[in-house]
Image (tube, rainbow, N blue to C red; front, top):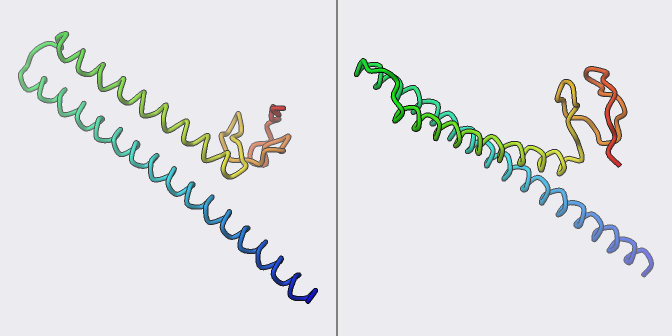
Length: 126
């Protein structure tokens, strides 16, 4: 009976580990998809900016306040999307138990005192 208890306990531990790992991978994938969607939206906005400027160029008029306001609105949208992408990137690093090097921006382990990529000394948050 002791053998069966150990086997059951080991199977339970294996199941829990696998379920946790699968959940973590699913969360990472969901975050990456959301980030890619936002990056795609940014690209669409870049295209729209170019289109608007070219249309304005064709009309052969000076850049007026109307087009300036429109471009500013697009830039604000890009800033907001970039901020959300940055938040998701940080969430992704936390899921991986990693952080970013302050110099070269490589992903490194949380406990690294020096970046293995560039050698920069890391500030360790307590």
